[in-house]
Structure formats: structure tokens, C-alpha cells
Image (cartoon, rainbow, N blue to C red; front, top):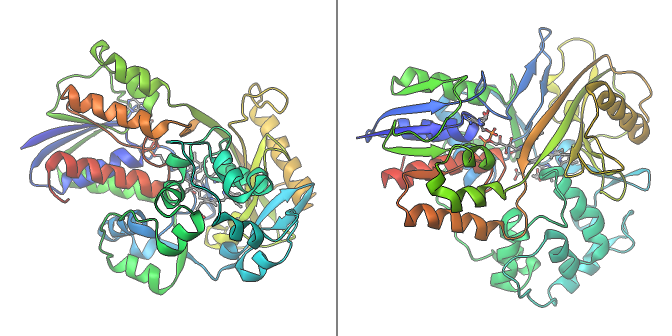
Length: 463
Ligand SMILES: Cc1cc2nc3c(=O)[nH]c(=O)nc-3n(C[C@H](O)[C@H](O)[C@H](O)COP(=O)(O)OP(=O)(O)OC[C@H]3O[C@@H](n4cnc5c(N)ncnc54)[C@H](O)[C@@H]3O)c2cc1C
Ligand SMILES: C=Cc1c2[nH]c(c1C)Cc1[nH]c(c(CCC(=O)O)c1C)Cc1[nH]c(c(C)c1CCC(=O)O)Cc1[nH]c(c(C)c1C=C)C2
């Protein structure tokens, strides 16, 4: 019988507590969260008139083992009727845009999109894809994402498409991020099949974890969901887990309770803290681990939610991204009301947009956002909407959040760094597991799955 301390009440720490709670081997879970609420970056504003605005993640993917795993948890939490799905045939799944050379360009999709020259690219992408099969396998253990794609699909594709994609997922710089840690499927495809294209067609040869689909996951396949949210916003997910934990009678959930230095409250500690926060509470005997944790950098993203009266967008889709060569400060704009009209106020048409700014470029000179106020960020966001989307009206509602250090950056060598930390923990027999977005993936699905993996490894059984 075990007592386990879980540090950090973001979605990873809550998920770990949820899985621990399901096991008869665990008698008590003590969850320590430094802020006054649980959920971490999952944060939704619910306005009294019914409109919902997301300040962190807004769409969760159902695909793959980690996607199924989250949907199984949603089933168990009884949130089925709260789900708001977006299917692959929806315009928000089909249309994504790039803002390049001061114009919006629809990202090429389908066979026609690959066969034709589609601006801003100067030749058909099929050309690069066919050549990709012939490119030699890389020799390094790891490589930056930009260098990997430059080698395999050409500099233009890397400079525009890959640069933008990395800003739209990691708010990061593809010239520093690791391909092995950020896109393990693509890295493994090259390693195992010698080509990304062949790996995509034949499978990369690495077996995914086995997660049998529950009712919601089966529904997601039948209805062809590309992503989903919840009627009252994604924050309902941590709220529901916290309620279930409280009801279980096994979990002591403490908010306003920063994890101080490691104490022997428990038989085991699961850290769901950001890497740097964990490093500051470890004892001095863990110096090699502390040093490695400190090396995991994070970036800050300014998230500006805007609401406009009426239907103001010139295009329909998920949103648009900007490569760093176009504008360092503005990463992209999400057209929230297209994917999730259910989050609009119920009466009177509105357009809801989210402008994301900063990331790896937050503190850089030139386009620096380092010393800006919330008012400056709001002006910058409305200017971006005016310039990119020709929306000249003033927003009727806005909200600015500076999400400090919100996305860890898996720089080149990240996988080896994480492996050496886990080796140290094993060698020193420390009763400690590392979960959350600092290590094995930043998506909501990834960090929930990291909580499940840690619980199973600790208990030596499926949970
Ligand atoms: C703007 C934005 C958009 C995103 N969009 C998406 C998306 O569309 N889809 C998707 O899948 N993912 C998205 N993500 C990523 C995803 O939301 C995060 O990676 C994930 O929520 C991280 O969860 P976590 O529990 O690992 O970390 P966190 O949410 O950072 O949780 C860590 C917790 O630890 C607490 N803590 C810190 N120090 C201490 C201490 N000393 N003691 C106790 N507690 C402490 C913190 O307060 C926090 O609650 C987005 C993230 C951001 C910021
Ligand atoms: C402009 C900045 C950002 C936007 N979203 C995020 C940032 C930093 C954060 C984010 N977006 C996604 C994830 C999870 C990845 C996963 O593995 O599920 C995170 C952490 C999802 C996502 N968003 C875009 C893509 C291509 C993905 C990957 C999954 C998918 O294909 O759906 C593109 C995208 N993100 C943003 C915009 C404006 C945009 C494209 C138009 C906002």
C-alpha cells in the first residue's frame, strides 16, 4: 500500500492522481499545487452571456493511442455530452493559412495541392516529396528540425512551412528545436525506412502503445473527428478530474501549496512541475539532475482573445501562421468562431479570434515584446488582425494574458538529456518520476499519457 505525492496540479499532475486513484495499491495521494486553481495552462473564460474564450489549448486531437487514452478518460469522467467535435470534413480542418509576403495563402492540401505550384512555394511540393525518397539518411543522433527538413524537403519548404508549423505548435524556433524529440515519428521514419515519405506510407516501425478504444474513441473514428473541445471550454477537463479526485476520498488536493524542498511525506513522488521548478526543490545531493533540469528552456506566449461584432473574416479555416521571416513577434491567429461556433454568445453573430505572439521571439531585440504592457499587446494584436485579415472595426471585447514560460523547448539533444536524468534517478534509486510537458511531448494528450505511464511504472500494473 502506497502514499504518493504528486507535485503540480496542471493536467499532467491531475491525470497522474486520477490513474493512481484507480489502483487498490494506492491508499493516499497528496497533490500539491502552488497556485489557487488547478489545470495549469488549461484556462477558459466563461462569460455570463455564454461565450467561452480559451487562454491556453483550445483543440485536442482524438487520433492515435494518446488521443484514445484521453477520450477514455473523458468517458470515465462522464463528460460525453459536453464534447464539441470538429470533423475532418469541416472547413476548420481543411483550411489552414500562411501569411507570407503580406498575403494569406491557403496551405496546399490533397493531390491537386501537391501537383500544382501553390504560392508562396515556387514549385509543386510533389517534386520535393519524390526527391525525398532518394535523400540519404542523416548520420547524427539528433538534428534541428530546420536542418532535417532542409536536407530532406528543401530550404524553401523548411523556411516557410516548417518554420511556421514549429511556431504553431511549440511557439519555437525550428533552427534550435530537436527533430528527434519534437517529431519522433518523422525522425524514426528516417531512421527505420530511410525516408519520411516511405515511413509515412509503410509505418515507422515503432509499435505505438496499446490503448483499446472506449465508446467516445469509437465515436470519434465513426464521425471522423479531427479535434474536439468541451461545451464550457477545455478547463472543464481539469475541473472534472479534480471533482472526481475529491469524491474518491483518497486524494488530498492542496492549492496555494508550493512544493517546498523534497520531504518524506510519501513513499514516492511524481513531479508534474515544469523542469526548472522541480530543480529548485531538489536537495543538493541531486546536483547532476538539477543541472540537467535547468537546461530545459521555456518560452512565453502572449495570448490575446478578440471578439468582433458580426461575421468579419475574409476566409474560413482554422487560422493562419506566420513564418519568422515575415514577422518575429506575431506567431499566428486562430479563427476560434469557425472551429467552435458553440463557444460564441448565443444571440447576435460574432467573430472570435485569438492572436498568439512572442514565443521564442518574446525577448529578442527588434520585434521584442519584453517590456510591453497589456495595452501594447492588445494594440499589436488588433493591428495584426487589421493588416492580415482586413478587419478595421474595433473589437467589442478583448482579453490579454501573458503566459509566462508556458511551452518547454525541446532543443537539440533533449532526448539524451531526459534519458540521462532518468538514468540518474534509477542509479541513485530516487523515489521520483518525471512527467508533464518538460519531457516527453507538450500536447494535452501527451502529458495525460505521461501521468498514466508513471502510475503504471510505479505500481507495476495497468491502471
Ligand atoms: C497558449 C497555449 C496553447 C496551447 N495549445 C494547445 C493545443 O491546442 N493542443 C494541445 O494539445 N496542447 C496545447 N498546448 C499545450 C498544453 O496546454 C500544455 O503543454 C499542457 O497543458 C502542460 O500541462 P502540464 O500539466 O505538463 O504543465 P502545467 O500546465 O505547466 O502544470 C504545472 C503545474 O505546476 C504548478 N507549479 C509550478 N511550480 C510549482 C511548485 N513549486 N509547487 C507546486 N506546484 C507548482 C503550476 O502552477 C501548474 O499548475 C498549449 C499551451 C499553451 C500555453
Ligand atoms: C500560433 C501559436 C500557437 C497555436 N497553437 C499553439 C501555438 C504555440 C500550441 C499548440 N497547437 C497545437 C498543439 C498540440 C500539438 C499536438 O501534438 O496535438 C500545441 C501545443 C495543435 C496544432 N496547431 C497547429 C498544428 C499544425 C497543430 C498540430 C496538430 C494538428 O495538426 O492539428 C497549427 C496552428 N496553431 C495555431 C495556429 C494559428 C495554427 C494554424 C493555422 C495557434
